[in-house]
Length: 419
View 1 (tube, helix red, strand yellow):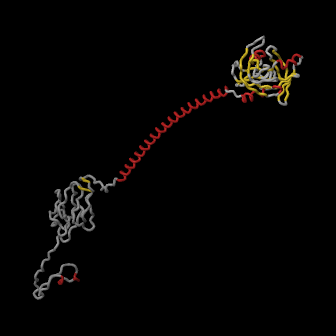
View 2 (tube, helix red, strand yellow):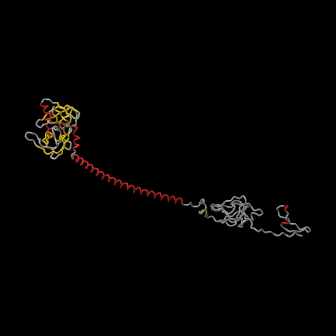
View 3 (spheres, helix red, strand yellow):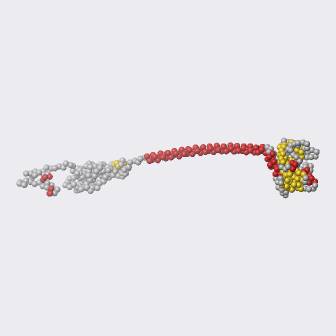
């Protein structure tokens, strides 16, 4: 009886070796051979144990689908990611159970042969660790989108392209700032132009105002002159009265007034009529008195002009002297007469110059006026609207009204040299 061959005929305790075949126990003849079991898969590829010459242009590229032996170093082609485990170009251990000489090696595409452990070249049949196909030719490779040629280092793969929106935004911001700066420059230029125009208008307005002001000043001066020419008895009297006194010479009274600059050696010069101080002068006395309100000042008769009825007095007191008119009076000119008629001091009357009378019958020229005067006005000043003395009141016509006579002031000034 023959035993079956297979798992049932294998003693597990006998180890992992092949099972023994037993013959017929009776005849001791060998039994029938067991059926040959063919492997259902291809034999594993085998690389020869001898080192292979270097591949032209660099290491041998790994082949997809070929596993590396355990512990064998791997080397991938630069810039190419391996598709699986590959064997390096180093030595390959021999496959157990197969002679090295019987294991052919794949021919190198460039014509180089691989050698087995015994040093004999192998055939083109792939062994257990032979490559599954021919090696790729040496040539340019692709790495990250860049072509690399043999012997040229492959640049590292570049990442994705950066977005350009920050640069675009920066450019837009720069353009916006440039536009804003240009707009501001335009506005500044406009404002500068408007300011210049305003300054010109202001200068023109100031020029017009200055011209108007000059015109107003000229008109004011003209009005002042007209006002000065306008007769104002009150203003004239107010300016003249402080310089006019009642003079007492013995038993007679009249009027005297200060004239010109202060006297040499101090004091004040005065004019009056000779007929007012005649009694004192003829008596050989020279002292008279000036009275004003409750005050009394002594004065001295310095010199007399009997022909023109003028006398020069001097006092030690200081009083403001009146100014003599430089121009001759004219008919119709308004005047003010100040004096002490009948002893009534500070009396004021007004009138006009009636005429200028030349000298007659040995007497000098006289001014005729219509202002009322009375005894006591003799020696008082006749003043024009400019507050200047034009004459010295001397007499009035008897049995008539409005006829008064005055000595021209220039005759008194020329005779005594005190004006």
